[in-house]
Amino acid sequence: MEPGEQAQKAFTQCQNCWKSELDGITLFRCGNCKNKTYCSKACQKAAWPSHKIECKSNQKVQALRPSLQESIKSLQDFTAQMRPTLAHLGVRAFELSRDPEGPLRALLEIRLLPRPDVHAYTVIDARVRPLDTFGNQEAEIRGAVKRRYEEQIRAGMCGGVTIMLWDLQSSVSNIMSVGYGPDIVQSPADLQWNSKLIHSLNEGIIWN
Image 1 (cartoon, rainbow, N blue to C red):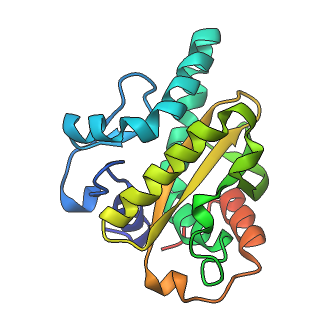
Image 2: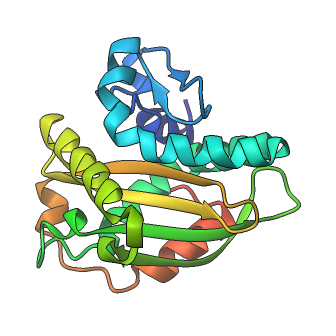
């Protein structure tokens, strides 16, 4: 198995217990939004409080514009392909050595536009967005971010960051969570995380 393929399998995980395809499990997608992956119905049920915001949002978009199913699949495939890069650089967007609980108050928002190429995007910007800027969605999003953070702790990590990819053309979004260990918390801030992340996503560079 190539290193890039191995990294992708390692980060293709059940969105509740965080077991990956490297563990030999078979994953299935949420039947409503066709987005998040789970290894069992029990895990899907347990993850629902964290997933319901994104699930309902994408279902609304699909109901208004049924043709967006391809946009949803494209963003899902892009997220899965680039997950190792999103995981490696996404956690570095937060200055965890200075503020280890920062991921409870903000998420990493990546805004992008689709390219003519299949499942390819151009990143417009990436920023750490405070949760108090989400208006009437703040309470629900804050609760989901907190649950994702706590899920990563239960999985043995020090915490977790929430990353939202937002297709500006279709208004489809995809949300993922990435756990981090003590090595990341103790590392100095990477002031170039933004340029590295945008360049890597635009060029299809997968970090191992």
